[in-house]
Amino acid sequence: MTTETSGTTAPLTSPLHDRHVALGAKMADFGGWDMPIEYPGGGVVAEHTAVRERVGVFDVSHLGKASVTGPGAADFVNACLTNDVRRIQPGSAQYTLCCDEAGGVVDDLIVYLKADDDVFLIPNAANTAEVVRRLQAAAPEGITVTNLHRDHGVLAVQGTKSDEVLEALGLPTGHDYMSFVEADWNGAPVIVCRTGYTGERGYELVPRWDDTPALWDALVDAIATFDGKPCGLGARDTLRTEMGYPLHGQDLSLQISPVQARAGWAVGWKKDAFWGKAALEFERANPTRLMRGLLVTGRGIPRAHCTVSLNGAAAGEVTSGTFSPTLKQGIALALLEPGIADGETVEIDVRGRAVEATVVKPPFVKVQVRES
Image 1: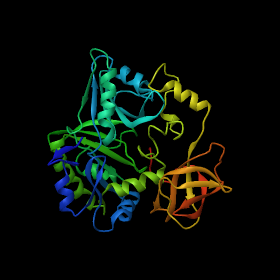
Image 2: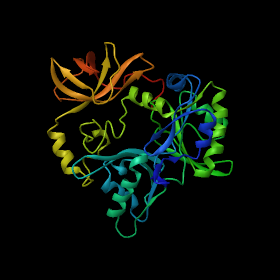
Image 3: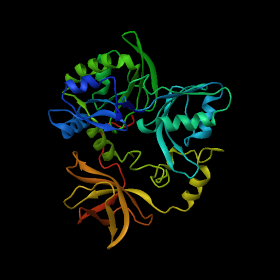
Image 4: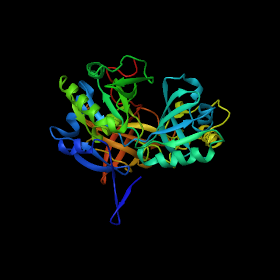
């Protein structure tokens, strides 16, 4: 998913790249895409706070998009991915995982069930081609799997004022968590889904690629009324870590299964089949390590791969760590030995210094409105 220019690999750009540059955003490569990390005027902390207290808008157009169509498309997806699509109705979305036969996570993604013969997928940017490849390889005659990565943009409006922002644009609001509406904005189609990666009430909008800039401009104007902010992927990371939401490549991977990441709630254990089922069932009965939250009580900010010790003995490793702008202290997700209980005190090796932390169950913060 990159382009070759004069012998070098250039990152892809979202349909809003020029907007981000004009706003002075700090840009960085993310999954092969040149994306905004933060904007001037307070950076990550200010953007994080805007979402927790008011509203923010994110460009996440780097996320993948794919379709699975044809008679029995939903049943086909259900036989491949972990969660049970038959638990939801058309017009609903579902978090699920694409695993390999060893139970490792190829990707975590959102399924939009449009109809029994029409399923829309949003994988992670760097994994889209592989998810599509695996589905195409397994698809029976009559099922078509199409990579739509650059056919659509994705904009996330997150925060307590997100309903008011969408209403100002004449977009639908108030539908149930993990449901979506196929709407029209200024004559252009847009999917409006009650999802997000921050824990706050919010929506993810999926317009056509070429319609994304005009919708972004309207959203940026609308959030200004509520002292909202355009937000980069830096704030998206601190917000999701406060909620304990996993990031593929750190908290989920081919080496970190749904069982280890405590994402078993996204596995349809009673289904007849899905990729990796046998391996995950075995691991479920014989866990070797489990994801826990670590709330730092000492001074220090944990980062990925920091060693975690209990009573002087190595007991696990941090997968994601950051400074929590809400709590004003360090927090982390870590894979620990399964016998370690919530409330225990552990030590994190932060650049050679032992930093104390308490084992907790995420989320680290309580949000005002999460799923209602």
